[in-house]
Picture 1 (cartoon, one colour):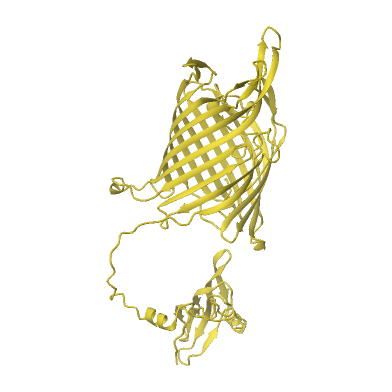
Picture 2 (cartoon, helix red, strand yellow):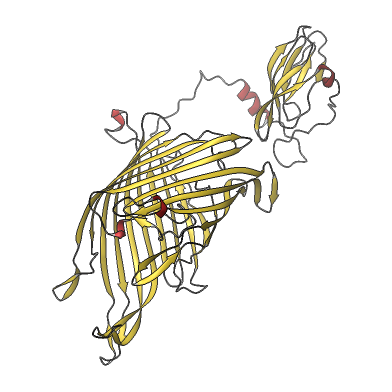
Length: 537
């Protein structure tokens, strides 16, 4: 005799003896059961905590089934003899929802609601009134932040602390979203960012089968530094004689807005992005007193020394294979090919003219083409080990342009063994090889609000250079090596959290003239660390 059950029963197959094998969640976890169709006798054949599905049986009665584990679905085997050893008394009790001391098999649904759903007739729909859908934004999420910014060496410990917030909101259908951040310190140095993305239909373009993602990005950044202005300079002396110096405070301000359009081409792995960038750089000299002019107050002055415009196109091919470790140790390929046409106005000679009694900068026009290739290859070596190769090539086409427009090779996103501004030029070439392997996986440990998942370690070597003019000899290429520790975590159950610690050493020592001073680089260690949502591969 066969009776109905309230459990979810699925994947039935019949054995040669006429008995039925199937998967059921009657204990709250799917397991494999056997049912004698003649007598109605049921027997539990597996007792797992992840779930057992889709059984298959051979002529001897041995069973294979699909079981769910922390690493995804796996195929398991249980022999005829092992099936008789399963202790079905050890099981979890079904708890659908709190309170845990009260059993609610149907959740919060009343008995009459359950019956109504079981007998629902979708041919008899109420006469709903048609209304046009109107989207709305979700509640704005606000996340406080505290940034430690040591960019300016003039700032004291408290000046380097920069409190702020992240804000985010999106339409419930993800047709448009807003994301922004703001941080400021007590010296009023600011980091402001706002991004708006639109992913809905656009007139005309949608009729042509195009549905680009449109974005607007705004940036406003300032930094404050101290310097001395020389008065009474007599160049007949070597070095020049200066009557007196006045310490002043100078603020550097960057403003930028980007208009962006992205669309998939060829396949889901390929994206073409077009971007127009407008930016301007301004330096502000704060007011100061001239001591030899009856303490005359010299007013605050602004100098807009750069106005940039850039029309940029970028093709991205992202063929990273989806794996359980792709967030920390990817396998696959990522290629970025970028072309920029820049038409800028830059006062690179610090020249000024007087207009209506005011100094105005004399700009030079710099129009040029820039191309850049970034190729990243992630090769699996088996056992979760990978060899990563990264190639970066770039060139400013045509005549030489001032170093203000240079490519920069060093820093966290390049050759980590050299500072960001140490290696620069109108041309660039860089090769990186990285070997990465797991130290610990499936850690499954929670510390406070942090859940620790896995830890990877890597070692790497770099060869690269940036230059202006003719191609340098290979002996001039800079070399470096380093190691990195990556820890993949989650915060508050849902926020991906990625911690990295990096150390790199530069093998080549060289010097550059910066503002009349000889600055040397190389033969030194550089250290990096950070906590982000994801790793910058």
